[in-house]
Image (tube, rainbow, N blue to C red; front, side, top):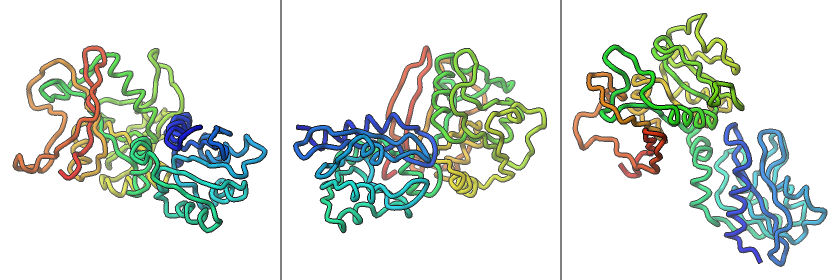
Length: 336
């Protein structure tokens, strides 16, 4: 017999098969027989495809009396597909178990619809684990703007470039390849016009041989200076979005409306500092190289902090060694 917790862990692993990018969340579903045996499994494969519950139901001829264990509250709206709550009702399931409530204004309410149809609903099973798994998407939907990661690479003394402005390469090959992995999980990459003019970046996701790999995030240039006609970004396979603005909140709202749920900020000290100063960062990705440069080319500029009591405190969630370099992942400290 499979417990709800075991089924939910399986549902989380199934959800991970779905795409991390895009408007829709990664969702997994496990159908259990009345005796607690696994009847079918499903997951969501991206916008326009069957949701996890419908995917699982499509694999059985009779789901009457079954229990559906789902990572996210079944949706209650018509989008590209119909409401999952209705599909479960029509399939005759007797119980629905889910971890986290759907925060969407249009899609929420599935649990109540199920209860109104006489189906038993159990919520909150492994909620903390699913909250962490779906953190970028849940954060974006709750805030109405993309989940923002800020990345920078620096020496141990916090310098992002030498006195002459050169910065390639502070970190080694393994760290740079990790950046491409992180880019692949983003819907958009944001840089400032200063970085475009100084470095002429491509902002593509590439493999170790330099080849383009997988879906490409949308390159977004923040600032009012036009991108040069011969810039590398003009040849990006996704095109180029020039914001013509420095209003970060408005830019993020516009990106959200365009379907961007994960934004990866790579734009140098000026842009990174602006996002931090405005309190718009959910996660920090800091690459540290075992080198010293000195000077004033710091990785982060003025944040408007005047005393140690005003410091923006972080919680380090992981440390990874990449060749000789380190990757520190941190998030704002709760309550700080």
